[in-house]
Image 1 (tube, rainbow, N blue to C red):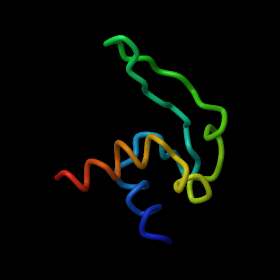
Image 2: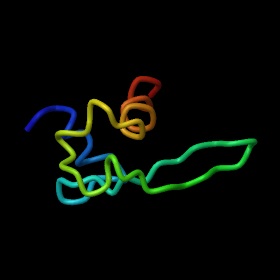
Image 3: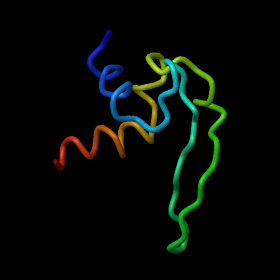
Image 4: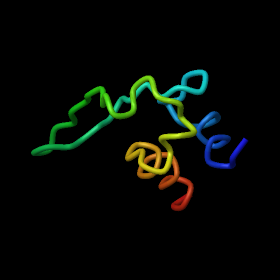
Length: 66
């Protein structure tokens, strides 16, 4: 298993048995919006991680600043 997928398995809220739930958060005019991103939802996590905004900004980003 690749290191990024191992981190996703342990720490990503979107990780579900190797598949991505595709839940994405954005902030617009001070309000948090939630949507299901069809580009990621239901796809194999290992194939999406490089392009996953949630994983790269929230999961991996929090590790950098920890």
